[in-house]
Each structure stands twice: as C-alpha cells, then as structure tokens.
Amino acid sequence: MTEIPWDVLLLGGASGIGKSLLAARLADEHKAFVVEFDDVVEAVRAITTADQHPGLHLFDELADAVDGILPQERVLALQIATARALEPAVTGVVRNRLTVDVPAVIEGDYLTPAAAARAVREGAAAGRRVRAVFLHEGDAGQITANYAAREPAAGRQTERARVSTAYSHWLAEQAGEHALPVVDARPWHTLADRVREAID
Figure (cartoon, one colour):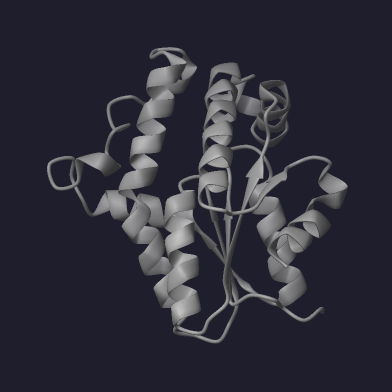
C-alpha cells in the first residue's frame, strides 16, 4: 500500500466511463471507504417530494427520456439542473467523511465541479486533504460500448450515451473553470496512474 495523499477523493464524471471501477481500485489500494453518491441521491429523493424539492425530481415523470422521448439538449439540461440541486448534499457527505480517520473515495455522476471545489476549500480550511478529479470521455460510441458490456440486456442505449457524452463535456468545461483536474478515461490501463499524477 502506498502512502495515501488525500483524506477524501471526489471522483466525478458522466455515466458509463469507468468511475466505479476506478473508485474500487483506488479504495482497495489505499484501504479507503467508497461512497457511491448515486445511493445518496436515491435516498434523498426517497424522503422528498417534487413539491418539497423540485430540483431533485425533474426526471420523475421522464423515465424514458434517454430513449429519445425528449431532445438530447433537454435531457442534458435536466441532468445539469439535478446535479446543481444536489450540491449541498455533496458538501454534507464530505463533511461527514471528514469526521472519521478512514480515507474515502466519493464517486458519482452528480458530483459537480462547483460542489467539489467548495469541498476542497472547506477541507483545506479545516486542515484536511480533500482532492477532486473528473474523468472525461468524449466519444459516444465508446460509452455505448461500455453500456453494452455493463448492461447487455438493455440494448445499445445510444441516446443515453449521447447525453452522457454531452454531460461529460459540460463537466470537463466546468472543472476547468474551477481549476480542477480533468483526466481522459482512456486508455484504461494507465488511468489510475494518470489520476494519481493529476491529484498530486
């Protein structure tokens, strides 16, 4: 086990580009705890209603949106709006993880660079090492292939992959604005090393 350079690592990126696999690998190497932010998202949605927190329930009536029911631009806008509505939850999870001495990797689609940058600043103010990095995949065909390998029963999911690609570009652009590192998801065999270099 190598010396761990962070107390909390935020690992963001669009759906279908390898965040969960990388989070598991880094956590195993550093004996860290993995928080899948998607689980937090579903928990928060379960205890709120659209009236109480509309930003968390934008997709409630649009389960088939990624299959072409809505234009890609509209689905992307809803995804971004949902992610922004969840930013306070990101801060809460990071604050909670900093109350214990076990390092943690927090990964998920809905981690925004704005929330990550805020968590990094708060960590620094508390004398803790919070780091953030965003994975990027700009090829919809690659994400389609990733979905097919991960979820073969769901079909090709080309529309979902196009939205994910557009979201990946948005996250990368936002990460740049917040001076956070962006790392290409491919090639996979060098990804862990490239992420380490980016956050060091």
